[in-house]
Image 1: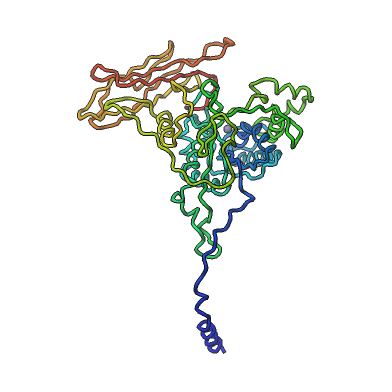
Image 2 (image 1 turned 30 degrees about the vertical axis):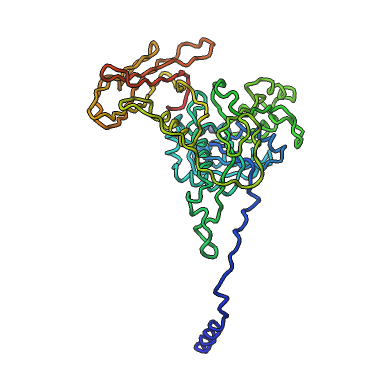
Length: 463
Ligand SMILES: [Zn+2]
């Protein structure tokens, strides 16, 4: 009986007409419209979205589809609402962020696998996030959501813009802006299935985002003026009948772990008291400012976020790399995140990104300022270099100053450490940044000066 069945099968297979072996080309499946976004917001921690929710409230009035990416679950933060810490706190904060955004009607919310990192140094954040892995995740979400515009934190080191994770979310977004449209990048994401229920290849399409804007949380405002659009947050939403800032505040109420005492106070206020919160320009009533990173569709620098954007895909655009500046054969410059950002702006064509001169940082005092340096010697012989520091009164140079030798055709990493004094008694006036200069000399000539504006604070994240 078995043998008979086998023979029958053979007859059946050989009897199949030859045209069953051929196949017709099929159009690529359309991406899932439920995940299409006009705006993709990228931030670091649950509650960071509050930096942009007043604008999102306006964008919802304009019927924009919005998706949000959090790079971490915020598991290193404090918990004002309960006992949960570490990974458990991350689980709680993920839900808080989802609730906050659901209050606005935003439900397409994703979390990357980055880890909450207590640092001001973007390079430390990127390392702790497993940069390559989180970038692949970010590119995947750009290809899935196909945003017209990305809104993210400003990638740069400023006083106030002091969380390395915030900066890293801006770095990752900028990299994804330049990579997601390139089919040669993470090609497994854009490869089609080779078999039914393909378990590896993702069948996404490359996607070129049209514009990227940054929101700065730097203390200074001067260098951001006129670098992008500004929006009042006081207009009343057609959807909710509430001012935009008030929609943002109501969404923020979900963040109990981060602000329970503050939120409890608001819960006790009457309407008139809450209204007052919008009268100060520093608080909920402050205009929302953006900095234009780049646009591939024209539009003016301070025009509307959607100026120049029309529906439909645009071709992949290779980033315009700014040429490398000419460097003398023997030179010294700032290293660490400062030299990274100079390379980053060049590599991504962000020629107009505001950038403080001199570079600046706020640090906890008493404490230590570490100034990373590169010393390049492209000459044919070893060079003796002398490092010296000009410091404010009461600041002390520790290791790193003095003479040392840089071999021929070598680049040396060096660092100068400065002991920061305790802060003077409270004077009531705002602390000003003070200036530190490290000078490098060789053969009786100055070969480089690294200047930093340093503000001392009672509390600051580690450098
Ligand atoms: Zn944050």
